[in-house]
Image 1: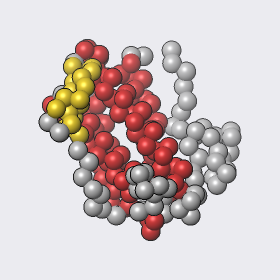
Image 2: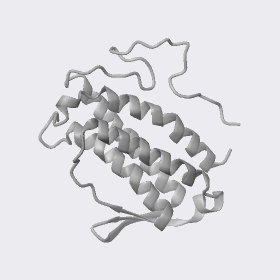
Image 3: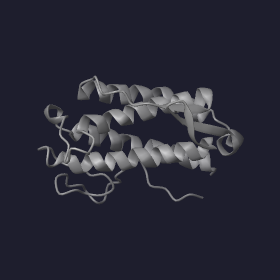
Image 4: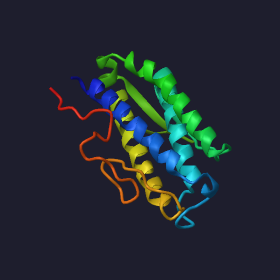
Length: 175
């Protein structure tokens, strides 16, 4: 299994967990933030949508022009936009060859300036780790917002899970 194939498997396994987390957010509490310096719950969901959309830009241009406009959608609309971006990205991502994945130089651009450069594959891994990080932030907001925290990598106090059923699509040992 190549690094690219392993990434795609991990990315696909994480997708339903993202959806479950977004759907656990109380839609009437999107402005919740635990501290004035923290992002709101809406901001954390929205940044996930923006990141997914940026990955399409990355494949098309070799760059991400990072800018996060304020969220202007309901929670249901943001979830639908996330699902749409995932559906649009999946076939494109699967067409990337291993040489491009490992060697194509890409750029992360902020305010017109290159913030950093790295390989296409590394940029995608960084994006996935960042998305997981923001999902973790969002998951700790859910209970204080009055919601129930979903099981993510194991049971939560709010979401009892049958420990004999896999949490993600399938945990496999790489061969």
